[in-house]
Image 1 (cartoon, rainbow, N blue to C red):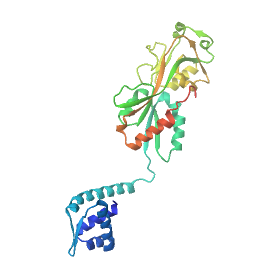
Image 2: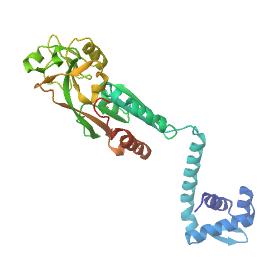
Image 3: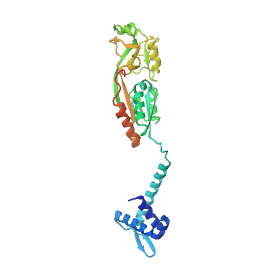
Length: 293
């Protein structure tokens, strides 16, 4: 069943004659008759009773009429929308990354966005880890990458990687020259990354008077470079401090941290968005960077 057949059927029904429909459609009467015959053959039932006075709808034609009107109206609506659409239209995907994670994935995401620029408009930006779930639930982002597991019933979450957290000091610090006891290490100022939370994501204790706790990881790394303290940092983020810092050999543990890819349930997205999010996960995020890269 083609849209041409539906338009011809409606023209005959409205004109109550094949000739009137032909005049309205600017085609021959024979073309109208042939199109209606093809439609009736496809449906397996007569839609009109032909006579010398014109064409009257059969009960089947009367039943079919409002359905044909609806189908043609929907087709015309879609056709109008598509003609008005910018020919450069691409689906947009908004990905929000915790600031501490941003540098870890930015290069891969930039390369992926450039490679698929004709298929999608992939945009990503950084935010505080504490803001990630709000960015998602407020629909300011289609997906988020964060250090913290989002305890939410309204999201699907995947653990991308789990990284040990080690203590790092300036490379020439005496702390990196041998085994350091827990008590000796705790005497040092701690540089604690909070990600916008009240405390460090992977440090259980409360910050001390001499400690620096903030959401700016670059600032904390600059303090580490200047020898102002010890930074507990996931091994996977080691690359940004490797030039000037080294791990401390100690029995004191800071545990581990996870990096999570979180989306709303698939039912919140249209098919295109859901498929594009799946492709970003499969082609970019499912193979996380190794430690220090």
